[in-house]
Image 1 (cartoon, rainbow, N blue to C red):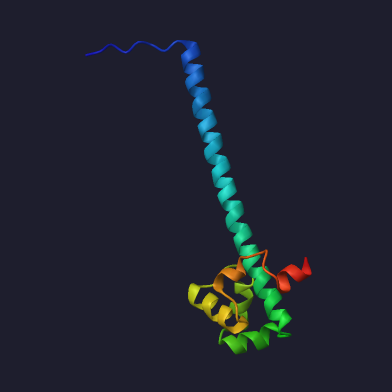
Image 2: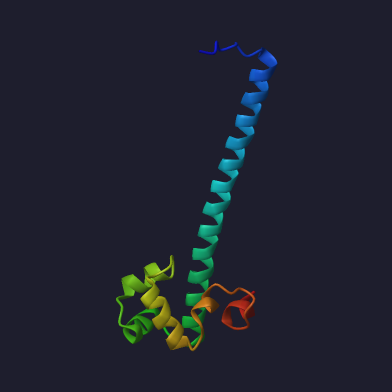
Length: 113
């Protein structure tokens, strides 16, 4: 069996410094991922609300049109709904599903900014 040689102080400090850098990178990646996820929801909800308002519809009227409850619509204007409803909303507005997240697209969202 090989006898384990104790690490000298400099080697151990260097190894710990590399481990700290790796942990910081991982933390930043998680932070970036959370921020991107939050922004994705914010873009969708803003676009949905802007499109609904561009049709001159209240939440009640739009909920009735789409067949969802007002409470469900309100939650969709705060976060992404299920994919089937995203497709339904896109069909009503006459846009592609990707358009909900396209901030460069001409329309109610870009007109407000």
